[in-house]
Image (cartoon, rainbow, N blue to C red; front, side, top):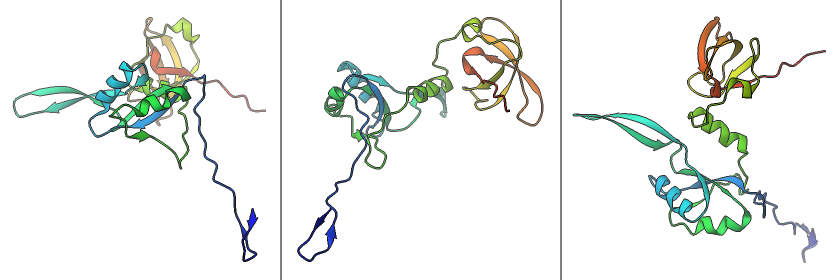
Length: 193
C-alpha cells in the first residue's frame, strides 16, 4: 500500500490470478469455439499436434420422410485440449478457437478424472475385465455411466467377462440389474469407530 498526496492509503496490490499451465506437464483445459464449429476446431487443433477431446453423443432426428442419427457435441461450443504452457499460443492460432474457458479470470485446469468421467458416461472407455477391477461378490459399487449413473448397490454375481449383476437398493426398492463392468467403480467401505 502507498500514500497519495492527500494522505489517504491507496492499494498498490495488483490482483493475482490463478494459472494452471505448466511448462512440462500437459493439463486439460476447456476452450470456446464458434457455434457449430466444435468438430472443425477439433480437427484443426489435432492437425497441429494438440491433444484434444470432443465429447460426442448420438441423437436421433425425426424428419418428414426419414429418421437420421446425428453425432453432436455433448456441450455446445466447448472442446477440451491437453496442453503445456508452450502450446498455449498454438491453441489461439486456430481460427476456430474463441477463448479459453476461465473461472473469475483464472485459467484453471480440468482434472483428468473429470475427463475420464465424461468418457465413461458416454461409454467411450475400454471394457475392463472383472479380474482387473478386483471386484468380487458382495462388493459395494457405484454406477458411473449410462442411465443409472449415481446409483449404488451390491455386486451379486459375475454374468460373463463384460457384465455383472448388481442389486440396487438406494432407489427405494431392491432390484437386480445387469450392468457392463466398465460402467462401475468400487466403493470402499468406510468403517466408523
